[in-house]
Amino acid sequence: SLTIGIVGLPNVGKSTLFNALTKNDVLAANYPFATIEPNVGVVGVPDPRLATLAGIFGSQKLLPATVDFVDIAGIVRGASEGEGLGNKFLANIRESDAICQVIRAFKDENVVHVDGKVSPKDDIETINTELILADLQTIEKVLPRLVKESRIQKDKAVQVKAVEAVKAILEEGRTLFSAGITKDTEQGELLHDLHLLTTKPFLYVFNVDEDELADEDFKTEQRALVAPAEAIFLNAKLESELVELDDDEALELLQSVGQQEPGLATLAHVGFNTLGLQTYLTAGPKETRAWTIKKGATAPEAAGVIHTDFQKGFIKAEVISFADLVETGSVAEARSAGKARMEGKEYVMQDGDVVEFRFNV
Ligand code: GDP
Image (cartoon, rainbow, N blue to C red; front, top):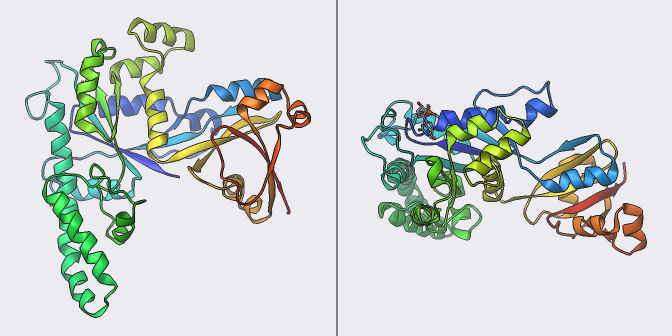
């Protein structure tokens, strides 16, 4: 599955946040015998539709979609030169599908900042610089070879051009993601073999003081620092308290700081989106479940997430939209109201589709 690597300078609240994430671990709740890596937190993506469906179908269990967060320790200035745990750090980032930087915005004299002052802008730059330098090193290693090859293989010239173009962007101190170059873009595909770090999607968690959680001006300012990446605002300490409380108490504590949902829930949603994922739903007396697919996945691809045999033997999918199912009240009623559609191999899955697959075994 796809993973989000959590990075950040020391003392910004990464461990505090990560501990809250692992306490919230859905694997522990739903799959008690699963082996869980110590540096991976598997977080459920809250989806109120699941409880509604479970009510309609009398499901015993609710299984939300999940996002995997990986704690990537060891960023220090000079990581790109192999300082500290630099090499391991970069290798771990290379394996992640998105990068989530935790940024300190909270003020607390008892917690030392590595650079002596709280400055989100500087922290973002510090991390970006290491990642950009690492990408430049990669490029400097491969570019001479590519240029040589392009003299014989003319089709390599396009790739040389793409690499030179991104080199210029990196030299300006910009990440490729912020310049709109990701692995899904045409340029990104030409760069695929280089495994550059800064083409990965970024998202940012601002670890803020409680009174900043509802400060819209402050948040607008910080958002501007990281756009086009998404920004999430939370208080890591508060999150670590919330996961210890039952639902009612947690809600009360949240409301006391002017929040609707825990920051971890927002993080799960935004992380899921940043990875380019969406869900479809299945429901029955045993369980109601959200399955994870890539945005734009077809019906057979969606079936393949449940079982490869479902994809191989795919015949069709009976699809009812969540809204129609709720409105009609049952599958039978939805069918007789003409709201159940039979979709074939070309069908592109929509968010909130409630599905039953028909397949040959
Ligand atoms: P890491 O080095 O980034 O993993 O940071 P830690 O999670 O270990 O946090 C460093 C210190 O900051 C610890 O003493 C935490 O208790 C404290 N800390 C973490 N989050 C917050 C926060 O939101 N507010 C305040 N005041 N302190 C925090």
